[in-house]
Image 1 (cartoon, helix red, strand yellow):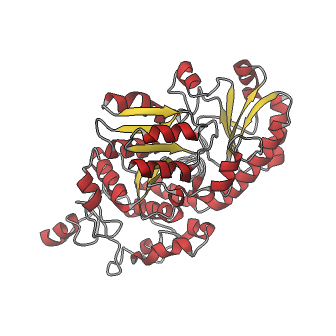
Image 2: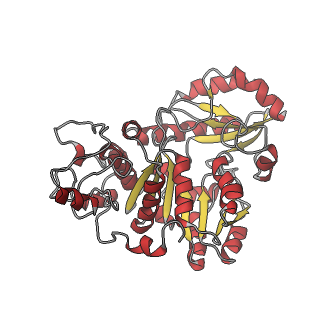
Image 3: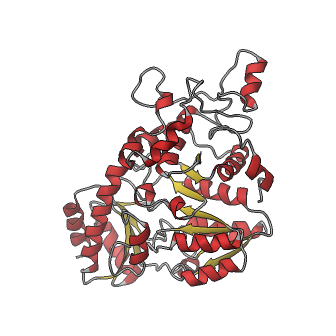
Length: 432
């Protein structure tokens, strides 16, 4: 492993509970009033996700009987003497030291995501891209090889085609739709397989379990970006992934008012990435953690509505004479529909479509929408849309977007929780 040594990945505080975090740590224990007994993990198989989205990860912070997790803004936590201070600093006793390392409000967010993803451990970041970049740089070293797909999110793609090669990491990007080619690339040897499924904004779906088996045969780690699907619709860890990444800014938070990222998975790997983030400083702030926690309480309700709205709209678009292509894995006509139906419980709240006339039609139609923000975001309660050139792949050149199979005339349409009849009426008057 690069960034953090393989030894560190396997043994770094391996005997301690989940939230033991190196030099500035917080141990969940029954003896500590600020830490719930870590038997809470059994709930991820006994409670339904809609309930976990509301309750998970919060009990140990309700110290005064408050029904809402408090926002802990303190940067540092004090101790009465050197012995008590050092015990916490070295991970021998529960507590907090410094907010860049751990924070009570942030930890509640991490625990909620951990339980929803049915993971051993979780950590958080200031943004989704911080989660992706810290994970890759923590677990790779010069000389390693990564296998991924061509049409990942634009920021991720820039890491693959620019940042990682500069650092001496070889990257092979495969046709997202060709699982056989991906397997062949893995078999040639790689340290890490990185998948994003469904992809943003083309909504392609890759078979996680099949490719995870190929990665196991090659001794590679499997990392899956689950931002578009969310844990309500898909559990990559149950399908063989080692780590799951989220841009919590999107569907998890759901209100476009807080940025954050999350990583879930096996304890040793998460701790290795946590230690990298701890030193490099891309920590989630407690106010954003609170807003994300608040948003996640309605995650199940929002996703159910967005799944249903997106399906109705995808079918409507598919029948429209001026729409040339509709990308949504819930449609029977989608080339990856069978794969999506096998590994997803719902097909998500985002779709994309192309208009007759290409980019000229996009420029003409977009200003007509009255129930869609023209903005670079997705996953919120309000419908948001725009072309990849100004949203998901603004970092990329037209040539790079073309190489990823992303046409300039595509509209990414993130469906909100509005009444679907109003959204269809808006699409009708905008497209004509």
